[in-house]
Image (cartoon, rainbow, N blue to C red; front, side, top):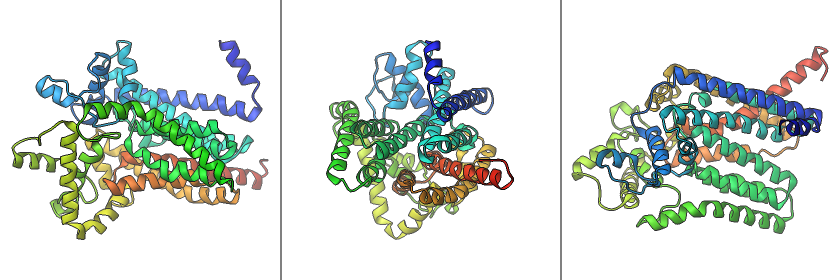
Length: 447
């Protein structure tokens, strides 16, 4: 097997061979670095929130309890079907559980592996974005290196948040979309749809990419509209086929319709309240979320609203929408703050302090602010260079739109910016490669 792999690598052209070898080296180094963090900044085990949810639910899954509510189980010992989050990150962690490794550490290792896969996927997407041959290979390697050392990415891994795995699926989706742009085959259109579904089964907001990334890139490739529309239909069918088992399960389990998760409704009560609208607590939660508001409403009602998980989520969504409607005069300010937080341009160091809610180090989050701004600044010449080379920037616009729309719908936060992070890192790699190449030419170093 090893000999066969060596022969395949040897058969590649030199640029591709270097890219494969060095991307592998960078990915392995990224994994080793992330694993090293499990003994320091990621040493604490979660005692609540999404990380505990995923950890317990992964074990429930292999024990035959399905996708049950871990928090209700802790309170009552009952296993009740739930769809607070889509299922794929739970399933990823459950791979370790299936082999008998059910500890926090085992699941953190799986999270780190996902983060390392994201590094490789970003390199692959960058290589496709930068062009073929030596140029694309250099861009891909630079992007992979940047992703390996970029604090907003590695600080997530090992904390049992799904964003590392989400970044991996989004990067592969974007890569497939670029391949579909160039190759223009049904196979790549179908692959784009499959990976779009996998991204949406990790975090529901990925489905936004269907409208702002997948549809534009398939329809705007050339003037062969009928063929492009047919490819879009294939991508849509592939996406629907992958989503179908989860959606069918939800339709059988719940009274109210649940497409991907109930959180798309429930989040509205956290994001639409006097704290998130900046009229309480000196406005420091403006554009963010405030979980205790839901607890306050529960206390006023004397407990949870009636019904199953879908009906309760629908109730909370109605509360959030009602608050937004009653305070629509504040919406322009709130939406601007949400968008600003989503791009980390509004209250950036407060966002870093809020990262402590997720178990992250504020010091590292502050370093992440500066790293993000550097990547964002370098992405501007990166866009210009791609346009000059007549390469498409549709994936980057789509990724930026995905983060922006999800921020406007709910709230802005550093964890939710990872699709935009990967776009900025790839564009920064394009710019850095061009600057280095220009410098070598100017000072006689060759091409």
